[in-house]
Amino acid sequence: MSVKIVSEVKRQPITGRAPLDTKPHLWLNAEESKILRLRLAEDMPVPAYINKHAEAKMRNHALSARKSKTEVMGLMLGEVRNWKGQEYVLVRDIVTSDLDATAVSVKFDSAGFEKLFGKLDSAGFDYVVVGWYHSHPGYGCFLSGTDVKTHTGIFVSPHQIALVIDPLNFEAAAFKIQGDAAVKVDFAIYWDEYDDPYGGLMRISKR
Ligand SMILES: [Zn+2]
Image (cartoon, rainbow, N blue to C red):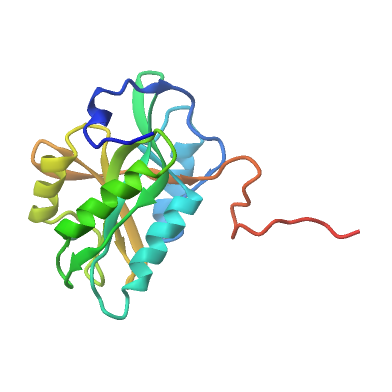
């Protein structure tokens, strides 16, 4: 089974209700979390839901480059869904590769791109690329002019999102492009039934 980067454009969204078990990202502030919780209580989906394991991978990836203060990036894989006429994405996993990174820029090097495609081929599921993530070590969450160009050049579908993580200020934000401008969008962390939302430890009671 292979996942092709161009395929998501033609993919028809799956009709389905948004995940029920959701929470705000750990690094949203209290006010942002409060507003998001109200939105999540409604029956209309927010633009993106990120599986808690995928979110932890991205957060830890960004945190791993805290000392060097270099950027990291990767692709988000998942599904495009539709509920009551509103499209949204589910991020089920991520892939990353060797990076050519400095404190203010990041890109996949050419060898890294080949590896990345190899990883997409062996990902073992038929997911599509629903967006990308990268980090801004210490300078906040926004899309730079270069980020906007990257996004509009590669991620042409309107549902695709860009997640920005600042591992020094402990911030995270998701964006879409409308016209030429980056617009911040709501996103939630979700977990599947039987997943423990708090740390992934199985709570099996001892007899
Ligand atoms: Zn950036």
